[in-house]
Length: 274
Length: 293
Image (cartoon, rainbow over all chains, first blue to last red; front, side, top):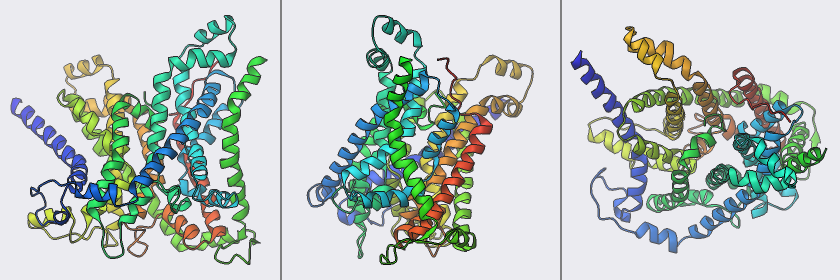
């Protein structure tokens, strides 16, 4: 009996260890590759030691367009969040507090925009952007990202607002606030944590987006995700530089995710798991 | 009365966005899907051809193959990540060590860009230079041509998806396991139920809601996968790893066959809406609370 328990425990920890190694290895490989001197990137020693060098980072940060496109990603993601969050929160609040006819059907439409592959909207959105001359502009890409994130934002903020009892707002309204003032002065501060988390998650989604960026931008508004593919030359692939650029591009999402980890699962499950 | 006006004021900005970027393009896509419209032949413009594109779609073997692969991709990716995630969650729940460490570690694959994880895996998969093949050789095995072998390419992409999203399964099911009451489990074990019986007849049914949610979310995300295939194999070798999404992108943005690509897009939209309906209406996983106004 006791031996069985020990064996069961050993098996459990072995499985856990194996999974952890597999889960972490690609990240380990990415980061160590980025610090390898150019000649070591393909060294035949798979796990050999090497003297870390900043060569790849130097190239990426000083001899490449990468910083410009990274900055594009910052601007595009930031503006997307700053517009989507207010627009989505207002609608989320309306969904949480008011009677809306056919609420479930509305929700369904909202869910569809979250669920449908972006590719399904690609052709008509591309034509729209061509018609308005918004190809390769911040405005065009941001407009699409607002649309892509809005459903998510409405749904998540609705959940946060529902957790606040309506009485607090009603008390403020008895004191002479309008509904919108009560929302702004009472509800928003009470749900600030959730709202910020929603914004941070949308930032991560936008930061990581590739498909629309790849069809709608060439050079001016290109975000860093699309630029990563340019390390694939016709003659050789700059794996070291690519790894350095990828590591830099992963820092923001990772830091944000760790700070917001309390809300991450809730966000990724559209509020279904709290 | 005042609330009525407030309600519309609050909903209006969102409605404008949905109308401009959701409804209007969808209507345009519907119309465009009934025309022959190729950007490589601008002189011809849009020519109305009725259901021509849809007839072509029905007969297009490459399309059906791509759809089948997309369904396979979803089925395999979701089931592997679910079984693996459930296993790890059950083990983690019982270990009090490292919980915090694991919870942070598991966040990372989920939040880095699929572009990055895909290109990184592409580097590791490389036939001559990749670390995976070097490790295989180091332990005396043959090299595997992950991306060049038509029967492996799609599964190499599935592996990336599994790697990225198994942590989500783990974290959701861990939340579920933590929410379970303790007493019935202790009572069952005292009454002599085996570990397997407890798992089969108590844990799984009680976790039901979390399982449904995580399966729906995983299926949604796996159905949206684009970069993981496009950047790894570009649908190749041949069309061996082409899915609905990458095929649609090829038709629309390489051949510029806008009419047919619109028809494919409308199909994809209906297909996912239909799936969403089945999943959501019958599981009730995402029900909103009914509020009294």
